Amino acid sequence: MEYREIADGLGGTGVLDPSESTLMRMLAGYRNRLVHFYHEVSAGELFDICTLQLDDLDRIRRAYHRWMESHPGMIDTTL
Image (cartoon, rainbow, N blue to C red; front, side):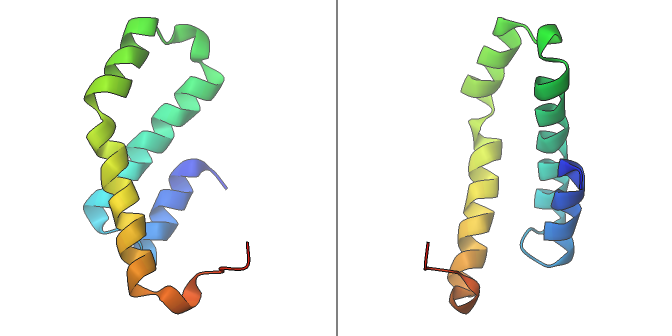
Protein backbone atom coordinates (compact mmCIF):
# COMPACT_ATOMS: atom_id res chain seq x y z
CA MET A 1 0.00 0.00 0.00
CA GLU A 2 1.28 3.45 -0.80
CA TYR A 3 1.40 6.13 1.86
CA ARG A 4 -1.18 8.21 0.01
CA GLU A 5 -3.62 5.29 0.14
CA ILE A 6 -3.25 5.21 3.92
CA ALA A 7 -4.54 8.79 4.04
CA ASP A 8 -7.58 7.72 2.02
CA GLY A 9 -8.19 4.77 4.34
CA LEU A 10 -7.96 6.93 7.44
CA GLY A 11 -10.40 9.35 5.87
CA GLY A 12 -12.75 6.56 4.85
CA THR A 13 -12.88 5.14 8.36
CA GLY A 14 -13.41 8.52 10.02
CA VAL A 15 -10.03 8.81 11.70
CA LEU A 16 -9.38 11.90 9.56
CA ASP A 17 -11.96 14.31 8.21
CA PRO A 18 -11.87 15.01 4.45
CA SER A 19 -9.61 18.06 4.73
CA GLU A 20 -7.20 16.21 7.05
CA SER A 21 -7.13 13.26 4.65
CA THR A 22 -6.27 15.63 1.80
CA LEU A 23 -3.52 17.20 3.88
CA MET A 24 -2.11 13.80 4.80
CA ARG A 25 -2.09 12.80 1.11
CA MET A 26 -0.02 15.92 0.41
CA LEU A 27 2.36 15.10 3.28
CA ALA A 28 2.66 11.51 2.05
CA GLY A 29 3.54 12.75 -1.42
CA TYR A 30 6.28 14.89 0.05
CA ARG A 31 7.51 11.93 2.09
CA ASN A 32 7.82 9.95 -1.14
CA ARG A 33 9.77 12.80 -2.68
CA LEU A 34 12.15 12.88 0.28
CA VAL A 35 12.71 9.14 0.11
CA HIS A 36 13.05 8.71 -3.65
CA PHE A 37 14.28 12.10 -4.86
CA TYR A 38 16.17 13.32 -1.80
CA HIS A 39 18.99 14.56 -3.99
CA GLU A 40 16.58 17.15 -5.46
CA VAL A 41 15.55 18.59 -2.09
CA SER A 42 17.65 21.56 -1.09
CA ALA A 43 18.68 22.29 2.47
CA GLY A 44 16.77 25.59 2.27
CA GLU A 45 13.57 23.87 1.16
CA LEU A 46 13.82 21.31 3.94
CA PHE A 47 14.55 24.03 6.50
CA ASP A 48 11.52 26.04 5.38
CA ILE A 49 9.24 23.04 5.64
CA CYS A 50 10.54 22.10 9.08
CA THR A 51 10.21 25.62 10.42
CA LEU A 52 7.20 27.04 8.59
CA GLN A 53 4.87 24.08 8.10
CA LEU A 54 4.89 22.26 11.41
CA ASP A 55 1.24 23.22 11.86
CA ASP A 56 0.35 20.65 9.17
CA LEU A 57 1.98 17.85 11.16
CA ASP A 58 0.41 19.10 14.37
CA ARG A 59 -3.02 19.12 12.74
CA ILE A 60 -2.67 15.44 11.79
CA ARG A 61 -1.35 14.62 15.27
CA ARG A 62 -4.39 16.29 16.84
CA ALA A 63 -6.70 14.31 14.56
CA TYR A 64 -5.09 11.03 15.66
CA HIS A 65 -5.33 12.10 19.29
CA ARG A 66 -8.99 13.11 18.89
CA TRP A 67 -9.82 9.73 17.37
CA MET A 68 -7.95 7.80 20.07
CA GLU A 69 -9.75 9.68 22.82
CA SER A 70 -13.08 8.91 21.14
CA HIS A 71 -12.28 5.20 20.71
CA PRO A 72 -10.37 4.08 23.81
CA GLY A 73 -11.55 0.48 23.45
CA MET A 74 -9.80 0.17 20.09
CA ILE A 75 -6.35 1.11 21.45
CA ASP A 76 -3.93 -1.73 22.17
CA THR A 77 -2.27 -0.77 25.45
CA THR A 78 -0.21 -3.95 25.75
CA LEU A 79 2.79 -2.47 23.95
